[in-house]
Length: 105
Image (cartoon, rainbow, N blue to C red; front, side):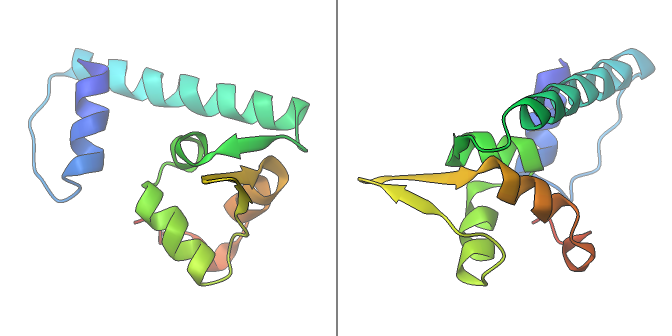
């Protein structure tokens, strides 16, 4: 159920839902777990390239937002053939930018 709530929130950010406390706690625990895992990976491997999907999950945004941020110069994608990757250290730096706080759409 936690994954369903997270997916629903990503797909329909303006929807109002009623959830019971247990489901809410499960969703929060899942989010915290994912964030901690991403932070630990980033700390261990700052020079690693990550996929578009990984980057979006780590930042809690959509792939469209990554594209938009790249077009605005916030991120520099690395193209390898037809795939797009991002440097982990760039993603870490991006999370610290004050001008992007609250613009994760």
